[in-house]
Length: 177
Image (cartoon, rainbow, N blue to C red; front, side, top):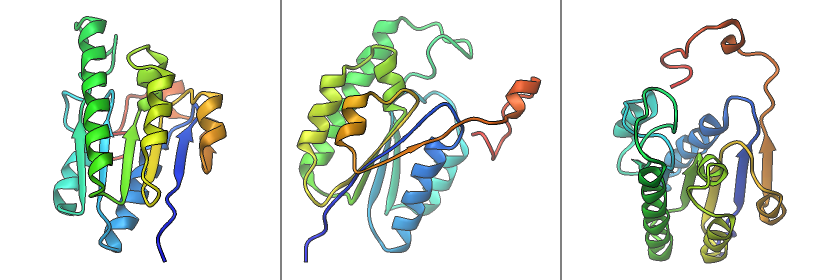
């Protein structure tokens, strides 16, 4: 019996979207499934997930494709540089999907890239159309468009109720990154 893949969306203003996708990848490693995460916005700094991924190879891989968060943390790049990186990431995702060598493909912060105008909604919908039947495709980020919610099989919205940022605390190593 062949597997029927799912389109899974983690969206919303609350924390935990990337963490939920990483949890799926961790579970998949337990079954010797191969997973890959493309990070559309994150890049340029080391995170706990990158260090952990080294321990989970070859079943799990993360490819930071972005140039870092736009307009924060000292970002001095032109928007066009961020856009070029996002388009290159989409091209790489298409190549990976077409090869069929992964069970789960995670597009981390793709909705942030979309919201910033680095990629288009049509390009994301084209990725959904290109997904082979057995592939689980996971998309994360704030601001998922209705067209993608409609096409997804699973949609979870993270809602922020309380967060230390509200009291001026900075991100915690091992918890936030």
